Structure formats: structure tokens, C-alpha cells
Image (cartoon, rainbow, N blue to C red; front, side, top):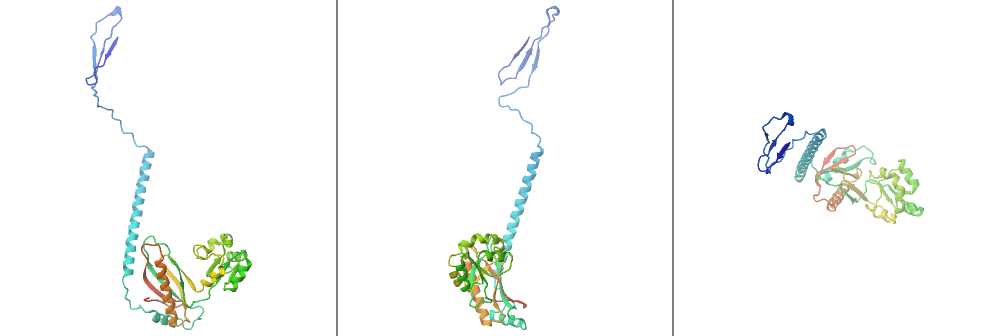
Length: 306
């Protein structure tokens, strides 16, 4: 017979065991007392820390790699901001160099550099080096030059033969529907401007990747899609499209056969259109012009003050 008695939890527990032998071989035995370790009400069993598994170690490694990549991205972002701030600070300073010329003098030097070359192939290009703020979108706009450097080649996409015939009479170089789209696919024609009627937009989906990167894809947002394409041709005559490529804005503004005064007039009109495009931009910080360079086809580049 075994008797176990448990007292209050606040007191130590003990167990009394009394063992009796069979009646034939009775021998008195003293009771044995087994003391147990005291346990109090506030004690809790401490669980041993489970060894980290392979999955947990892998997750720790991935978390460390993610933190490292985040730190690298933040460092690159800070470095880009510091470089942008330096470029914009330099652009605000007025550069004084021995080769800085006014527009008319630079035009005379560029005309002298093209002596003996065909006038039809020698052009004068203006290049603007810009100091752009962070996250600046591309700048777009239009400029109306007093004298065009070259004849414009305009394509009009329409599915209506009567509109195509009227567009050709209004000055369009090419006009048509599906047959004109096929010529664009085979690169049989080239042009600098394009317009379209709303009904011809489904035909242009097949050449969207060809015209889009060149900025020649007609769209309603840019105002090159309308039912009255003849009116668009008349209003767009003499307009030069502006579009930045990274930190560079370049455009052909004259030919070497132009007089220095005509070149200066075109440059002034170009800069006025550029400043207007900046005002219409949605960016909080406008781009700053660090350099203005005039260059000819075979001649050098000259920094000018405009």
C-alpha cells in the first residue's frame, strides 16, 4: 500500500511509501520518505531554445541581403542627388571662356568652315547641355522658326481617299491608308511629321514600334489626330518639335547658305520656344542650361551666349 499526500503548493511536497510483505514472511519495515524539490506558485518551466533550422538560417541570410541592397540603393540615390546638385550649381554660374562668342560671330566662323562644300548638305545645329533635376521627365514642345532649314516631309494617314487628295494639295508629301502603312513597314519612305484621322489609328498599330521611338506616332494627346488634317497641316507649317534626349536637346535650325542675321533670328526663336516649354513643364524644378553650342556638319562646335 502506497500513500501519497500533497500539501499546499506553498509548502514542499513529500511522498510517504509504506510497503508490506506477504503475511508469511512479515518483517516490519520503516516507512521511507522521498523529498521532492519545492515548487512555488510563480515558478514556470523554462523551455529550452530550439536549435535554428535550415529554413530560419536561410531567411536570415535573405533578410540580410535585402538590407544590404536597400543600403546600396540609398547610397546611389544620395550620390546621384549630390552630382545633380553640383551640375545645377555649375550651370547657374556664368561661364567665361576665350571661345565664348555671340551668335552672329559664331555663324560667320561656321560658314567659313563649310566653304567649298555643297550647301544642301551643310547644316547648322544647336545643342543644349542641360542640368536636370532628379526624376525629370523628358521636355517636349514646339518652336516656329522664321525660316525653315529644310523642306518638311509630312505623312498623312487616312482611310478616306478624298481627305488624302486634299492633304496632298495642302502640302503633304505622302497621304494614304493601308498602302502608306506598308511603305512605312518596309522603310521605303521617310518623313519628319505625321498626322492621322481617328479612323486610321487601327491601321497604325502594326507600325507603332517603328514610329513611336522616333516621335512620329500620331496621337490625340500631341494634337496630331483630327478629322480636319488639312487644317493641322496649315497650322503646323514651320513648327519644329522639341524633345530632350537625356541631358541633351539638339535640333537643326539653319543651313550654311543662310545669312548670319537669319541664323541669329532662328536661334533666338529656338531659345524662346525652349523657355516656353520649360514654363509649361509640370516639374517643380526647371532644367538649367549649362552650355549652348552651335556646330556645322563638317565644322567645329562653338559655345555661344544666347
